[in-house]
Image 1 (cartoon, helix red, strand yellow):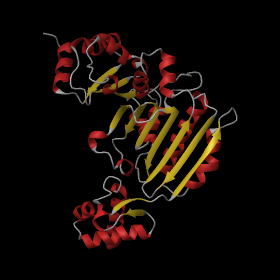
Image 2: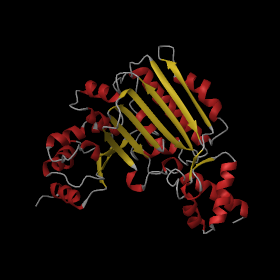
Image 3: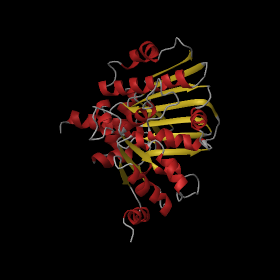
Length: 359
């Protein structure tokens, strides 16, 4: 490896993980590349001199963080004349075109357009605020409105008992309160294109950390990636706030993501016919998933897909009736739908096996 190539790799490594290691980035980099502390200090100072890193404190108390290379925010009047592509072209296209790789640009354009369109069409808000920050490793996009609140709107539109249930419905994909004008794919695909994606409304939050993420998700470890629901987030969000983080070095391409969620039996290229359902989002507090009624709620809208991956991560146990309703009753009624249990604990796997092969 040439000296220049190694230098570039060290710099990229530091920028990619500095958010996770603000205090010990030097030690981590020295171990990773088997170089001296003095050599690491040279690279860190070089990044500071280039305006890519910022520091606070001195000597052993020094911390490093990504410097903001660009930041912008503005308020928008939401009315029938506001168009998401016009906002993108006027404010954000000049800040990203030719600055980040093509696939990163396309992800940011898609994510911004879908989420601003949601605010325009669904929020019932008269204003929206957009915020943009770029560092050497990440792009951050925030869209806020002061409308009815996404979880409340979904709850009321579907007659759900709790706003928690709205989060679970959104996590499945193919959900919209306005099917005449929307396919319901925007939030699902945006959450999976971004390295980190969060929706805040009221006192609840839905977060998706992309499993293939890199720089933008450096502060999350492997056990934190996936889908999460948070209650009592420390503030009450009026309306809806959507926050999106995209790595400037992401290797994801939009077409590849569409392929991932297209069933192999799909008749149409890129048809959204496969979904990944995080079962833990249907489990609130200390409650367990044991009843047929809980299973029926989970099964809602499964008939819109050809393949459903049921992810049992962080679900230690399920009841016999719950499993029977999904894996025997529903499956027998819908043999055309492929149900795939994933990340099952030994107990969950045993319950599923028993309902499929009763003694």
